[in-house]
Structures are given as structure tokens and as C-alpha cells.
Length: 228
Image 1: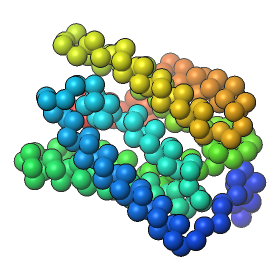
Image 2: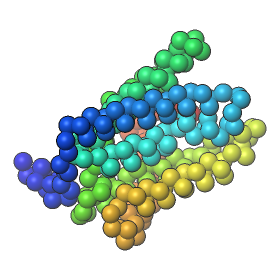
Image 3: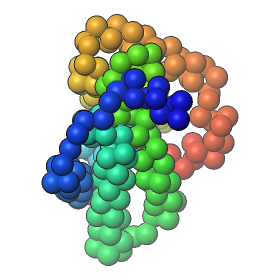
């Protein structure tokens, strides 16, 4: 109860009608279907490889999920929206992969299913980023930290050097744009950017220096390599 009161002090849920809630959920499903289909279609030699390299990475989905979460009426609705978003996106993506391309990427499906399963919790917390207080500032820094981490790892994306090595500066530029968009849209008070960005940078340095992900999830790196 005490935690709930503190969260309410951070951000209060907006009143919404059943129609508004249904519209929000349907909207999240439609966005998921469109992006899932788009990600699969551009995963083809006929398209510029930069689209494939963006769609196949975690960063773009963190970016979209963060925006869908913070612009929800309540944390519960944010959690539901993100769950149906990932559910619809992954269903379209892997149904197309399995039945049209006749390919069943088991490890990738398991990885993204785990992401979808934990996404409602992340979305529930992320909703408070557009509130007030220290908690909202820290939460606002989390998706930016994730983008900084993956953007940093892009330097090794095409080693040993091959034909797509030239994409690294372009991909880093896109990640920078996503970070800027989050900084400009998530906090209501734009002055908070001066606090959010340093926190995200510090967290990124700590996680990179101590190799946090590799220590916590020893098998995650090999799975991510197969995904991206």
C-alpha cells in the first residue's frame, strides 16, 4: 500500500472511458502487426540492409515500447498495450517466417517470447517516467541507457570487416536520433533532460565497464548474436 501511494505521488493515472481503453489496445495491436510485417518484409536482400539491421535489433523495439508505455492512460493499460503489441508483432513476424519462408528459428522465438513475457512489467514501470520526482527521472534514463549500450556494441557488429561494415556510422546515427526523441518526448519538464542524460551515460559506463549483462546472463550474448 505504501509503494502504491508513492507511485501515485509520482504520476496519477488519467481517467479514461472503456471506448478509449479499447481504442488504445486496438491501436497497439495494429502498430504491432504493421511493424512485425514491415520488419519481416525488409529482412530481404531486395531492401537496403540498414532496414534489416535496425529491425533485427532490440533497440528499435525498446524505443517503440517506451513511447507506447508513457503515452497511456494508466500503468495497467500501458502493461496491457505493450503485451498485445509484442504479441501481435511477434505473431505476424514468425507466422510469416514459418509458413511463408518455411523456416523455424527456435532460439530467436524463445528469446523474443521471454521479452514479450516480461514486457508488461517493464511497461508498467516505464509509465511513471512521465511523472515527477527522482523515481521518474531514473525510469526515464533506463531506455536511453539500453540504447546507449546497444549503440556502443555496434562498433563490433561487423567484425571481422565485411560488406556491411559501412553501416555502423548510419546505425549509430539512428540510435542517436532515437535517444534524442526519447529525451524530448518522455519528460514533461524539458529541464529534466539535464539530469536524465547524465544518469543514462553513467549507468551505461558502469554496465559496460563491469560487463553486467554477460555476468548476469552468461548465455545471453550468444543468443543475441544469433538474433542480430
